[in-house]
Length: 75
Image 1 (cartoon, rainbow, N blue to C red):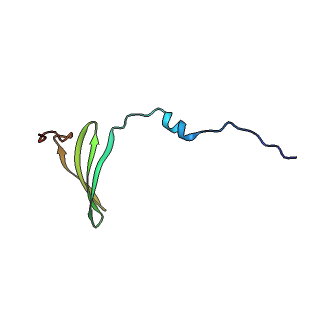
Image 2: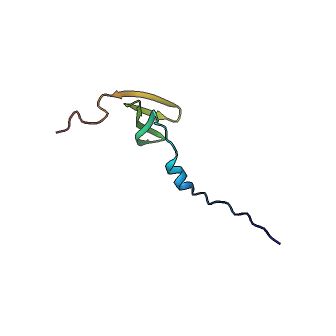
């Protein structure tokens, strides 16, 4: 005689969408591969954007971007 327990179905997708989310301070905005495992990337930290460059052995801050929204030269 086999007995099976019935558990309420857990809809993990609904739970995942409804879970409380914290605001992240660090965000990867965009990356560009340069070949030979090198890249440049725009990262955002606390609303400010930075241009960084990386290789397999190093990571360097290239510049702080002055106009993160890109509106300075917009017509």
